Length: 84
Ligand SMILES: [Zn+2]
Image 1 (spheres, rainbow, N blue to C red):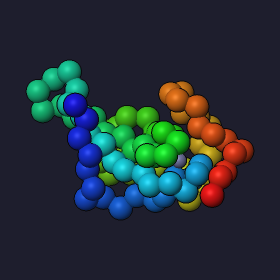
Image 2 (cartoon, rainbow, N blue to C red; image 1 turned 135 degrees about the vertical axis):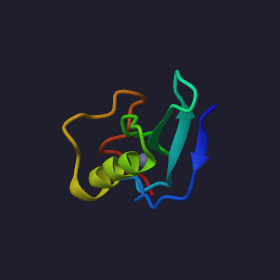
Image 3 (cartoon, protein in one colour; image 1 turned 30 degrees about the vertical axis):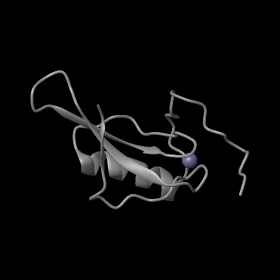
């Protein structure tokens, strides 16, 4: 089960402005964790990374610097439809 990690500063969702949070889950090996950030509203998410800081940095780049070339493949972010 992924667990929610809240001890890292992450920007709001660049897509919908919703609450985003950092997640961590154990990988295939003992002690091998993967981390990613996803939006709680539209489920936009980053790739998975080997550290919390990398995942947060990737998310914050997207949130503050525009869309990255590799768009998320899971879910279907509601691009273009921003509802208050
Ligand atoms: Zn969102």
